[in-house]
Length: 444
Image (cartoon, rainbow, N blue to C red):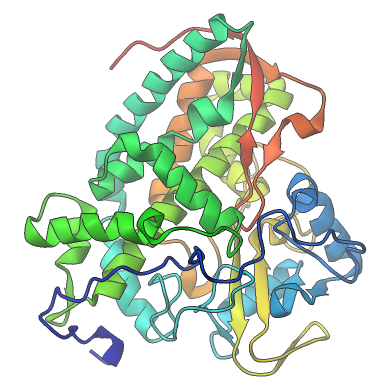
């Protein structure tokens, strides 16, 4: 073990769990920027704010503008942050672990909480050489074989949700919220099952996600209401009585015979809960939003099974939900932008995926695109360890919807009727659709 951060805490290898605050939840007594009180952006050429509604609703247009006229945008908000919009710059930064640290991955008003090389939520917040140690611990639970074993339950989850959604549509003139009744529940139940947490706590998980990813540093939270309090209870239970779940696996894992520290266990589980839910439900919801407006693609999926592998990758490319962040460690210049230590740098993988320098017809959705080395799961050493699970959930969720829902459309012509999440994970939070024809699936 090379990192002193991984030594057992005082009091024994599993001691040391104490009440603490989440990375981007804040104490009631700590000064914060209240939600909704960021000043409006006056000029996107000299300023940006990815946490405001204007950005969320119009992000593709913002990305295009920056790629074409301002490839590396800057803002004084958040203590200073950069937004490189082109694929080449995003890729270069993602691979450069000398000048950029992953210890801060969510840009917020409070600054950086984690310390290199472990960070707050390993492995996503870890730097080399510790990153490889932390990542290796998760490869087994997210291997293709492990994910395949989860597929039957995921499929039945989708079918159960569809039965309820279609029944609700029959009583509401065909109108349902496809995000809130379908896409947002699927990864919640899959991840909860993996972690051994109650699927009925889905609303609690959504609350954590909203505070940490959509309003980082902007919501005051009582200590007993934090994700930390929730997860530490579950971890302590698994330490005392291990179960067949992912929390027990991490709570009793070791590296070269040295047990993981409580912070490592907590951070990794928090990462799986947050990153494993919001990212996937956003990808599913965005894909349904696309199909509601492109019936020819809906029909292609219903009638051409060979197009599915290409379509899934194109949904991931075109509607990549995740923007990561890095912290500048050493002075560096990127495409003319002089970055200083301590600056935030956003890595907008969705913008990189729509760069014409990297993809033919980049701004077009090509359902059977053959060459598609997209960055939806990131670039460099931090490429998503859960990509097998995300692909499975997206494929199963869309396949079950397409099979059951023969025809549907957006419920309104008003683009603001679809509400997109603010922050660094973009997907529809509200997606009202009108189901025109559907047949509820039978239980498996």
